[in-house]
Image (tube, rainbow, N blue to C red; front, side, top):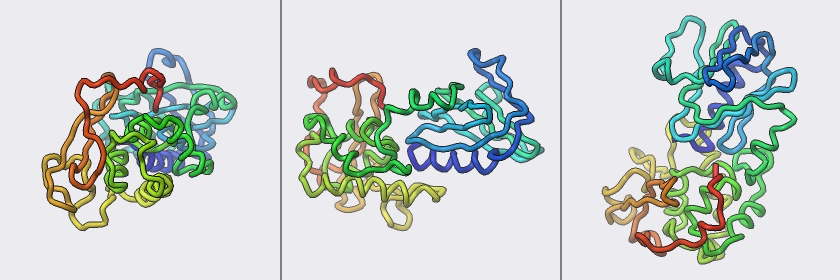
Length: 281
């Protein structure tokens, strides 16, 4: 599942494959950009911003993409077979003399002026893997609405950029609280610990092929994807429930013994949602 570390890895692959080279192939397979041709333009760089990717070209253009749940960028050598999916799932191809970068199932793809990047990613909070990382600002953002459930606050990229559904569940487990605990109820010592812990998890995993949060051989994650298997710490069955607003529910995992706080209240009104437009990515 693409999260901040996954996107960081994708940006590195794209940058290493394309930066400093001129495009010999430019193929946009979305109606809005079907006539766009970037052939001959040099690729300047690719940088991550939270879960967003910005690929910049000479002449002041930027390709802004987001992997969402199922998207991916694959890089292939000359003559190598493409294995990222069927051809109808390809959204864009950027080719050089010796490499082809192929974007599959990209649910957000837009070409914009580099000078206008702020309009696409300016809403994001401090990037856990970026040069703008500011733990104090990230914590202040999270605590701005104390009644908001912690899991939803962590997923809101306007608070801090890079946490996805896997890290949401794992962070809450490591903090010893459920994702439904109101942010304001998080004990002060754990609240202070949260930004540094989130950054440590992403930094540790940005160079790993398999995400790991436990440090235990044979067990990559504490709770995510483990229901109803036993908790690695106490043996209680891990539970799973949806968390979201109904339109973007995310499967959320927790241990009812190791994590203090409320469990999901099925059907209960959650009035904090009325204050948050759904642009959390």
